[in-house]
Image (cartoon, rainbow, N blue to C red; front, side):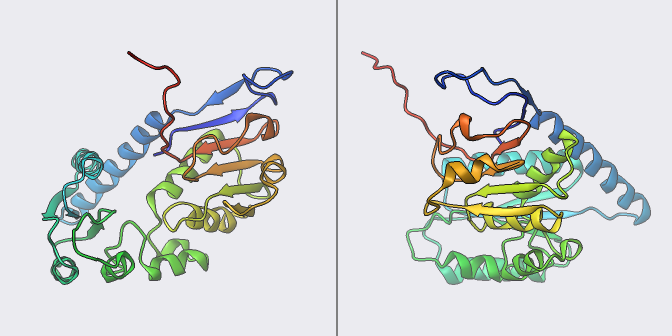
Length: 268
């Protein structure tokens, strides 16, 4: 989901009339991921040494059989295995009712051998299911995605050491750290206000002492807001929402979005 991060060295982007070409340092998400996984693997090994027989356990609960969800889940299971986490995939059919999903969550909540629960979104069911009700049904102590109102509330109040933080904003903070740029005292702009990316990203930057502006589809002066950003995080659901000439020199830019851009070529 984190497509790239760059620290611009010159203002101006290729394709912008009358401007210099952009020179940027790209921070490798793959390299950062490997560093994080190695650190977590060492932490898990240390726990297993301290507590004989202990093995952290994760359940990923899926409703339906969406191809994109299957891909995300397989990636999560592979990463968990590399780190030393016992991860189990539980799939309910796309005919599952809301009560059946809640019952599955209750069973995991009550299982003391399971330490984390991820409910894969979106919920792919032919029956109506309230996503908010489902995410809030996950025990806050097992809500490793940080999507329950309790974990979101703690994050918004700055209780960073007492809550789970959504993975994408947390990954953004890790990438910013890799640049060597201090967040404290910087002007950060977040584009997007979703519960999964935009809102928690705002909170993380704020409680790491940045001055934060959140922009969205109704923001009337987006170019002006972007031009002020020392740190720019884009989590909008629209491709090319930011123009290169808006970004100021030296800014750290992170794109969290996955957007489809049609090919301009016509094939016959």
